[in-house]
Amino acid sequence: MNDLFPHDSKAPSGAMYLIDNIYYKIGHLGYIYIFIGSHWVKSTHTRESLYELKVRTEEEEQKRIKEANRRYAKQRETKERRKYKARIKRKEVKARKAKRLG
Image (tube, rainbow, N blue to C red; front, side, top):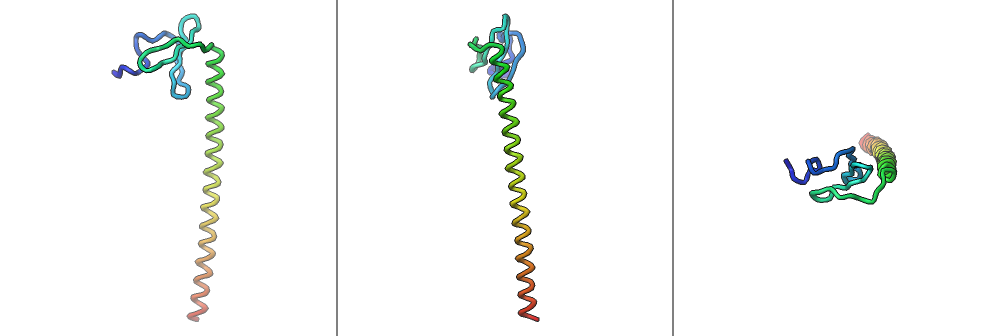
């Protein structure tokens, strides 16, 4: 087992959260612990601030997903527009060739 993994016997008991790639635990008496390197350290966070951090990161994630979807839609629209213009240009070139040969 990896020594740097935060699930070990030295960890405080309680609920664990992974927020922004940092492990947090709510331990005994509501103390908040942060996993640093290979051990848990008591932090100055309160239970409320940890929940606010979790909610805020979820909101940021939703905003990031919404922005990515908007960007992908714009890329698809641009791709379709290019394909349409290329199809029109091919028709024009074909018509010119037919006129020249015809």
